[in-house]
Structure formats: structure tokens, C-alpha cells
Length: 311
Image 1: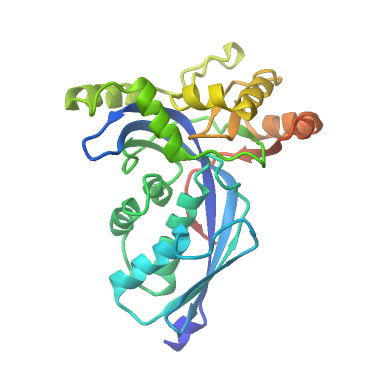
Image 2: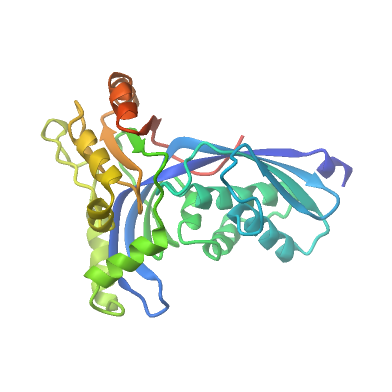
């Protein structure tokens, strides 16, 4: 116990972008059936974990706009492991927040996965990846992705994962208006009302869509022809309702050397792909003042082969 009490665990908790987001239909359980390609990028939060002997979960952060109570996914994740392990230990957790909130980059889901990994290590629970994946699915649809991380095909409501391989190390440029956030639940509701005519999809149709996505390759393109195509069904709703998203997509579409561009998740963050990080970083440098003038924060990011990482 004395060795445990001295332990400090640090976790890198990266964001994601959606390279494909398809809403197949509404399931009988009320969730949406999805077919996605999710990709980790190196815009990351950092979490630090220390044991306390009072049995409490104490969360602090440098972000003043974030609830630190039991509605926070970090706290929920920690208490989930505390209940499962039935031990008397607590944890002091500090979150350094870099991923914008309500941005379509799944920062909260990433933090939840990071907490499962961090507390598992901190308390010597020795849960394997499959056990962590099962727990993560109870916390949110995007959380399992971050346990596996890197590039993943995500099916079901996001909990069915398959490794997705492509060889290019794209650079990613992000644009997000810091004054705009979008409700994921509300966006899905609006999409359902407008575009989904069935209560749920037949299993054979779902399988066909999954198989089609498995065949989709981000390797099969000609850089000069800019022939990468990204699909995000939720963009049909958000782009029409949100001037910030519409402007971000317009600015990205006119950038030099851009391969493709899209909205991530339910927005409002939008992103563009470039052939490598150096190209994306140069484009950011050349256009930073333009982005700022139009109200956008901006980042150039590398893509990551892994998700949550102990550092």
C-alpha cells in the first residue's frame, strides 16, 4: 500500500476526427446505428492521477468552463471502477484541458477512457483491454474507440471496433469558433426527424453498409485530383443551421494543397486533410490571421497510431 500511495500516473488523452460518419437508422433500443471511421489526432488533454486514502474522487482542472462534479465523465469513470473493485482507495485527478469542449472532437469521451486506463493502473486492478472495453461502452458511444485508438472502423452505436489500415500520415488542420458549441443529442434528433423514415434497419442492410465501408480505402486516391471523399451525415443538419460551420468549410475548401475537408462528429469543429503534417502546419502559418479574423481557433495536428497513452 505504501508503494501505491507514492504512485503518480500521467495519461495522454487525444482527440479524434471522423473520416466517415454514416447514420444508418434508428435502432429498437433508441440508439442510432452508425458506420464510422474514427481517427486519433495529437491535439490532446493530459490527466494526472494520484491515490488518496480518503476513498474520494477529487477532480481539478485548469479549465474553468468544465463541471468537476459527478456529471463529469472522468468522475463517472473513476466511480465505476471504484464500485467494480470494491476498494477503499480514492484518487486525486488533475485535467489539463487542450481539446475544446462541445466541439465534435470527443474530448469528454477521450477523458473517460483515459480515466479507466489511469485508475486501472493506479489501483493495480489488472483489468485487461477487453474488460476495459466492456466498461467503456457503458459510459458513452465514443469511449470504446479511445481504448483501442488509432484508426478504427466503428459500428453499432460506436462500440463495435475493427482496426482500419491506411498508409498515409496525413496532416490535419482544425477550425473551431470558441464561442460556438453544438448539442450532439439534439443534432441526432434533428437528423432522425428529417432523414430517417424507419424505426430500425434490417440486419442485411446494416451488414451491406458495413461491408461497403470496410472496402473504402483512404489509400486509393490521387493527391493531385483531390479525390478523397469524406461523408458526415450530421453535416446535412449542422451546416444549414450554423453559420460558423458554413464559414469554416468555405475557408477550408479554398486552402492551398487541401485534399479534402469536412465537419467532425456533430460539429462545430471542421477539419481539412493535407498530405503530411508539415504541409498542414505551413498552411496554418500562412492563414492564421485569416482564421483569427473570422473568429476561429486553429490547430495543425498529426494523426496518431494509438489512442490513450500512459506517459
